[in-house]
Amino acid sequence: MTGHRDPVDNGALYREIWRIERQIKNDKGPWHRVGEDGWPDKELVKFRARQHQGFAGQDVVRARHDRTSDGKTRAVLDVDFMSLTGARGVLPAHYSELVLQQLKAKSPALQDFLDLFNHRLLSLFYRSWARTQPAVAQEQSGQDPFSAIMQALTGVSDDSQLYYGAAMMRGPKSGSVLCQVLSDLTGVKVQHRPLQGGWAPIAPDEQSSLPTKANPMGRFACLGEAVLGSKTWVADKAMVLSFAPQSKQQAMDLLPDGRYSKTITQLSRSFAGSRVRVQCQMQTKAGYLPGTRLGVQGCLGADSFLQAVTQPDRTVTVGFTPRKG
Image (cartoon, rainbow, N blue to C red; front, side):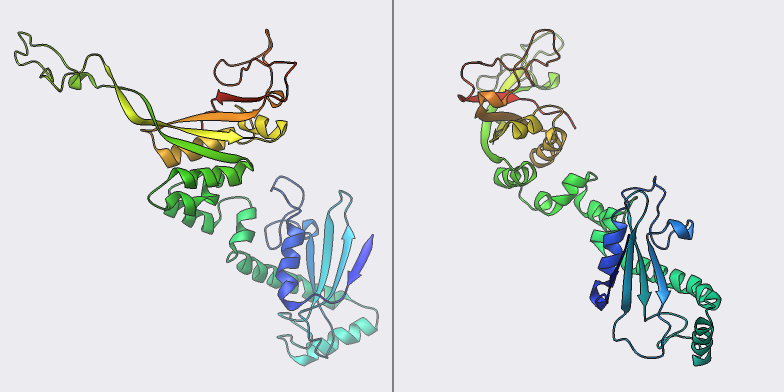
């Protein structure tokens, strides 16, 4: 199947090539991108110089599309710029006249030979443009320069964290910003409750001890500073994130091994730090939660829930533990 489109706007030329190249998901397939090392017949875009002595007024005069055997769209673009011959060609005019004479004699050999250089020249020109476009470079395999710069500025390496790099690096960090980030990520309303108390261990050399022969003065044993035990209560030890999924799929995406489980852990740890423990809760309908069955895999305290079969619409609040990042 072959289609024609005349002409392509000057500003849309690069976007047209990008749109076609987005069909290449990775480098393991038979196709490769424009200007890379590989066989010419495995490129999805081919450039040809327009052989005419008049000025077309468009960079791309004609675009022809067809389908490959595996469903990919290929394009042949007849261009009127940065070519060896033609109205704006870099070679002397008699070369263009010679090509036209041979085409009139039904001999396209010289045109095809010169198009080898035209195609490579335009391919490298497109690659130089793509390297300056963050959206284009980010979709290609390997690390692009823009992502490397963003990782250096934000200190993160995961793509999901890099997307929210501006919010994560804004100081001081707040729970409301974390809720906005998680809500945008999951599509679920998120609320947080700070200043949740919890027990924290006391280092052995900081624990209270009575006087002994080895330590006649004791350690932290004075009235008003002595602490009984090896743990102390910290008022801001933890914070609670409350999710409100509105469908079963949203609830499953939040649970361990769900779509957003690992990312929630990474983002929460990045915002709260290692000193504050993040606890997750889910407020949703009982029917959205997977009931636990004996003999089937389930993790106590993570994704195991007792479900009331007769009350699937009852709103329940349960705690869960996302997968560790």
